[in-house]
Length: 273
Image (cartoon, rainbow, N blue to C red; front, side, top):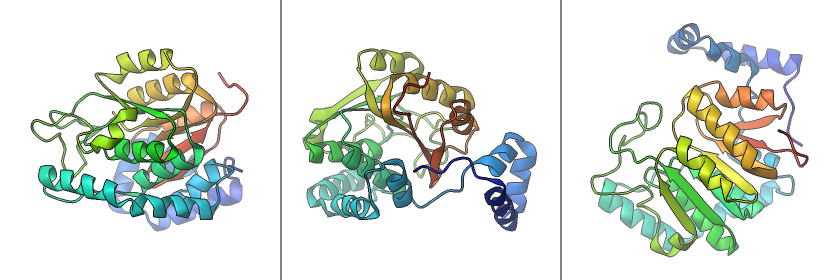
């Protein structure tokens, strides 16, 4: 069961723990952006990514999550191809992280029929999702992306490389044998996302990883929630860049799980407007 809004004791512990790790730069951020105080006091405590997956998917266990993780790392063909592509283009190996592992595990365990993501860039998240769908032999991924030809503030500016490689399109790292389940749609999600969802009868998983501003995130969460099937999952990266995710979940009275800077919320099985 997903933990609800923490009680007084849990909140007190978080405040004490938070202040014990409060540095001068963090204090400056809290002072400059008052909404950060709201997140500091009220966001749920972040958990390890495996625990987050097992929490958000009731039928999952720590064992099934770890098997999915092992399966991801054990696919030699996938890792050989993505590594070759990344070394040839970026001059380094792919930077897989817990967010990608969570995406793969969620897609494997939930077996979604239709997945939508916003924000593609090199395509690591797309590749992880498509590998899971391929293993499932079920499901499709639609990816909406406004190509980062230049550095994008509040999106790519903190990444190791802040723009796409010259001559490369978004999702260039995805191996060819996984592209059959992929529909890459280039343009602004504010225009394209409603159109993508209009032709879908129940999206099972939505992943936000595009522009992390209050206005843009709020639009995507609101639009995706309306198109999400009952029991579907909304996952967002970088939920502390703005108060949008926290406020969205509070406005819909749905508790969420936080891990590694990301957040996951499940749409109730009964319709919530």
